[in-house]
Length: 155
Image (cartoon, rainbow, N blue to C red):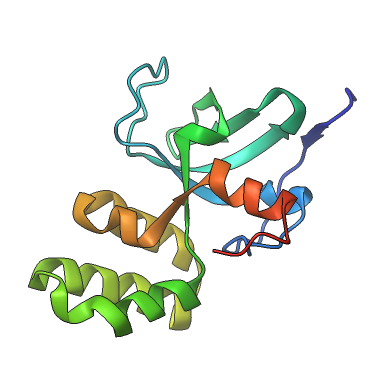
């Protein structure tokens, strides 16, 4: 195995915490950035799962439900924000959201807090279906990784 390359499968998926280690990336659900200009796999705004990672090369192999895979960098992938952040956004700014956006963000929050099974997958599908709430419910994977590598930095 090459240095920095991790290849694995997981049967249990959860939202990656801001302090997660890099091994926890494998099996995480992500969304390919909807505004990605060049995507040979043509999977913009598609949810997928991180299949393998080479952090040193910024290579993330993403597996999709149609049994295809694509190679992406961390700045082209979106990951769900932690549920406590989504909940706080709802509490602080829910009254300013349009009704459809409030409904979608509330559903995402409820799936993440109380859902069973593939709750993260369902939450990502909801985020993909409503571009208005993507900024509220998703982070760039690149930004999340930067937070991990600089734990002394606070938002």
